[in-house]
Length: 293
Ligand SMILES: N[C@@H](CCC(=O)N[C@@H](CS)C(=O)NCC(=O)O)C(=O)O
Image 1 (cartoon, rainbow, N blue to C red):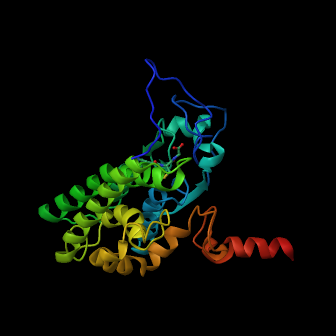
Image 2: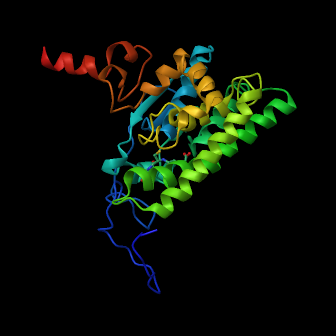
């Protein structure tokens, strides 16, 4: 174990040159860095987000609600570029003091209701639309909530722990990579064993627990996150792969994954969504073709 020895000083101080992929946006203090009001569109729900796993949980839910006929779930999705520090604008911090994406503003209430934390947003939307995508029976609903909270507590080990040290840290360090690889493999096994006996996370019904877990652990199973498929031998988690394939075939999941996406294939990037027709007319390939003609 040859990781560089570090003796912590008596009092920690902020080393702005610490390196790593997010060094330019990470800060030890909360609050806004600049004044900027948020744009507001015409729909009842205003989402400010980015198509990371935490962001797409919510856009998948909104597309599911719309496909299920809940017209009140029409939404404007505004792009928050976290690399540029958009999450530290004053208007953003007003509705999410934690300065992370996603955040939702519900303009059907007076005053407007702010909803932050992706798990809270999923539950809020389910409550708002007659308990949609949460089983109605006691056991199923409790299981969905168990797994939703499991995701909220577990994914930081996957993203902030494993992903950070394996993919983003300025150098590869054996100790943290070992610690978090072990934990992520344990979590994948937790899911794999559960999905061996259950079609969905809450049992027989597709729910917000699936929407929360799939963007993180399904993406991991498919080798989409951190280029770590071989390192973590993710093909071994056969039940997680079966469940992910099943969810990824849903049209709503495909649409949700495109919203606020600014990387990858151009035809799957929809930086902002203000209308269902935007999926046909405002993807990045179409925007670029229009600019060139
Ligand atoms: N627990 C939060 C986590 C949100 C989160 O970590 N969002 C990341 C992107 S996936 C973010 O906004 N990072 C920006 C930053 O750290 O400044 C949730 O589920 O909503």
